[in-house]
Image (cartoon, rainbow, N blue to C red; front, side, top):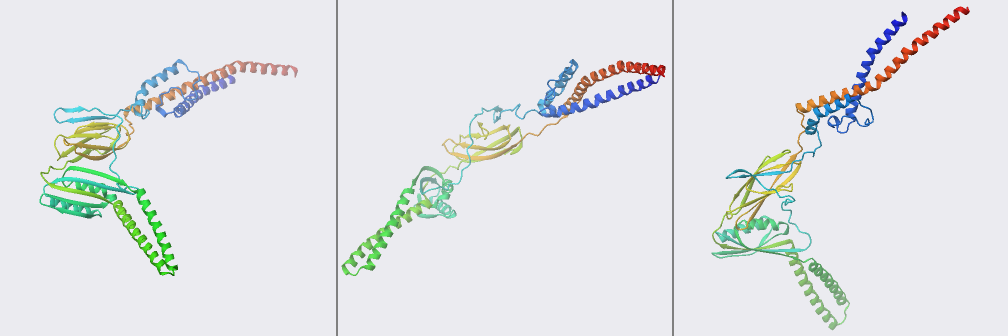
Length: 425
């Protein structure tokens, strides 16, 4: 009777503790399996890393398959690799007549960078000659003079008549391109010629010649101081005067060369004529920044020049398109220097730049993604419970069978032992 009561308590304890042990162990194994999978909850795997050799039942495989079916799709959408579904950049041209027309994009086109500093290294002389057609040559001459003085230059020569004017401007070499741009804007350019001359070797040779002449002059001065004869003194003074004349000539040439190096020369001729408005370009882009995919609307406003404009866009992401108004979509995060250039019927070109900042796409977490997470966690826990049950239940059954078989035999042996001891007494 006591044995049955004790055994009943033992079995009741086993039937209570065993399920709790399996559930708790399954939860721990399921969570550990999710954490250990590369890529986290949405790795899309049904078997935890490192447990590929563990035996699984048909039910376990069914759980894994159902887990993949429910969570796999939202996993690939919300938390998959960043470049799994990369969409190439696209451009849509806004046609004034037929609405939206898709433009052809050209790959492998590098954006032209804005003009950099015009400062040059080395000893280089810059010269430009240009002819501009203006309505008033005298007013144009005044504007050119103001440009030269405003950037630290000066006017080396100027002349004017009723129908024309000429100005030779000397401007700092570092402001050469800036000065050219401002002078060209005074009127319509009908002729242009530009050249440069590298005088580095010449300038070095002149300085070496000057040092040689100075050394020679010092030698003649020492001889003159040591001379005690009149004829010798007169001869030395003659040589000394010749050397001084050469020194003055070389110094003057060095000064002139240095001036031409430091100050570029712009010779401008203004002629009276009908002036066409200057070609101008203004670009409006919106938005200038945002998350990818970022669709930016560009609109180019062109005025002046000779009508018949061609507007080209280089978006900085190895694509290009043509059109005055268009929409371009940036699909990768980064800073893009978009170059816009317009060419009129006479070949005049105007260029502008717009900087676009595309940031990374925000990480999505919608209801579908949340449902996938919960489903994945739920089935991972069930999978863990099944795994623990596969291991624990056989061990428990073996232990129970062992207890059921061995316990009566042990009790029988004890009874026989007690009976033998009683008879002996």
